[in-house]
Image (cartoon, rainbow, N blue to C red; front, side):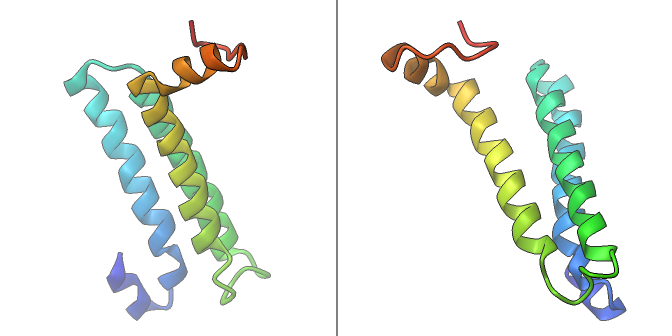
Length: 104
């Protein structure tokens, strides 16, 4: 992705990196036999598509607005997926008596 800066599409580097992570998560779901990685990879791909849209729109070109949006949103998606997989969300929902859909 760092080679994209040489071709005047450097703003797409973060979006393409996030898309690569999303595709690799979907492929890793078959190896690890964890279906939630498909949903996580799909969400990261959606974030990457939105970041690419921001980078390529007329108002977004040259502003660098897509980099923090893509990075932070993909990071939040991955952080929540890791917290769910480790059982942290279940502990928090039990501790604060909050019902989270999909968490026992």
